Image (cartoon, rainbow, N blue to C red):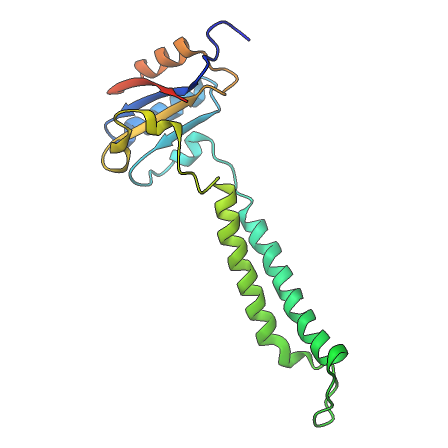
Length: 182
């Protein structure tokens, strides 16, 4: 490991910006310099910021689809087992396997498990609940939810060097550049 690459107890370096365009421009510049472990904080969504940070497609849609299919199959199997195997009743000469009557239950089970998959998958993929994050240690970070914009270069980035990262952020015109303690 190079000297000065990662200091013990350091999460990264954070820069504060006044407006969303400055944050977007700084994020693009940091990505162009080869940094991949970066994060941006804004009080409202900024068009293009997710792409600039390098977010990839989420696996949430696959989780929801899988849980929906599982719910539909489970609901159908539950009805089939109850009406064909466990407690068969011959009502009006209808067959035991009368699947049109099971469509509402199958549909509701599909929606129920898909909704659970969406909520639990979102929580898991976002790493929530997260009662603590290292950027909370930065003195001015509380204004990130009101009117300021922040960009963090994380120390886990393979290209991270504290002095270089700090110098790069200072060239992008921030209000302040601060180290983020772990």
